[in-house]
Structure formats: C-alpha cells, structure tokens
Image (cartoon, rainbow, N blue to C red; front, side, top):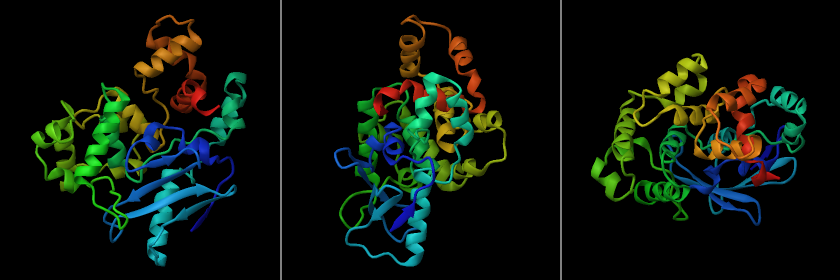
Length: 292
C-alpha cells in the first residue's frame, strides 16, 4: 500500500521526533530507516504487523504474508495517517520559526510532527509510564505490557494490549509482572474506566473544549499531573503547554541560561513568542541534536 506524503513532510524527522519509536510494539530500524508496528484493536479482525518506510514523496506500507481487503486497507491507512500526522498543517508554526533564526532549521528540515500511536489510550498509558523514572524503566514497563497482555499477529509479534485486557488484571499483577511500581493502581483504574466506557480518551482528539479545560479533564485520570497532561496534549495536537520535566529544564539551562538553574517563568517567557505552538517549539529546540 502506498500513501501520498503531504508537503513539508519528512519521514525520518517524524519517526525520530519522539521516544515512542523506541517503545514496543514499535520496532525501529535506524540503519534502513523503517519501522514496524503491530496494529490491534477491535476494528481489525486480528492484530496485524506492518512495516512502514518512505519512498521519497510517498510512504510504503507492507504486510508480509497477509493480503488485505479494501476495508482493512482503509482502516490501516487511517491508523498510519494518524500516527504520522499526515493531515496536520504546520504552516503557521513554520512561519513563526522562520522569524527566529535559531529556530529556522525546523522548517528547513520539515520537522514539527511528533510521532504517536494509533490510539490516545496507548499514548496515555505510555505517558504514565514515563513519569518519575528512567527511560530504561519506561522501555521495560511497556515491553512487559506488550509481552504479557498483547495479542499476537500472524508473525508472532504482539500488539499493545487493549484496555479490556489490562482491566482483567489486578494491581499485584502490574506491580510484579509489569514492574510498574506506584503506577500500578493508576493503570488498573485507567484500564477499567476505559473498558467500561466511563473514560473515553479517543474523544479528546475531537473535543470542543478549550485546551485549559481539556487539560483539567485529562488530569482527572489518576496518575496524570501537569507534565503528563501537557505531554499528552501535544500528541493530541494541542501545543500550548510546555510539559516541563527534568530533561527539558536541564537542556534549557544549558542552551539558553549559561547552565544556571532558573524559574520556570523564564522558560515560559522565552517561548512565549510561539503562542499556541510554544510546546512544540521547546520540544524541537531541546531535541535538535537528535535530528540535526
């Protein structure tokens, strides 16, 4: 299957824009610049493993050993377009970065898109798994979730678990098998709420709420504080919040404050010129060395 790339799209900078490409069920091949992913969910008959690559102006999607009918192709296409944010416009963001010489590289490199997973639920679980821990522990927790609760595709690779699958497990399972620590109770409550329909993370994508009101709604999920909510909002497509954590703060101190610690207010003021795009501006400013 071939998907036409939009203008100002760079496959490499999109895939490598965020640590999600390093978390299962993503398998990132940096040598060949492809990634594979196991797609699950109720809208597919069974988990489907696909490999995604770029052919220049298009994106190639391969499903080795599996023939897809028209409906399955349509659903898979929609999931990949969502993950790579192919329908999102960045012209306004680029116009702002071009006015600031130190940020003009972003538009020059067609950066700006943050890779995400096919569902807000998966993005939310993974975001919770990034709180107050090393990246290595995040990778371990996510891998355990996939290995122990994910359904297998025809090639044996596993998808990210559904909320229903996670909801069947108790807190002890998450503590012992997933090694989720204090997050265990949060994952139990979240998965049960989503499985029962009490919480619908997917609705946040099309919510008419203001960003501040939507953030308050997201923060009602136990285990989601200011950083996690603003991080998730970026994946939803709302870039107002900076989502400050220890990494972004330390990078800002080094790059823009001569290595000295400063109040968050100074960081907020520095990126204020980007308005509703400030959360995206700080992310690419602080992760420039991974792309350039």
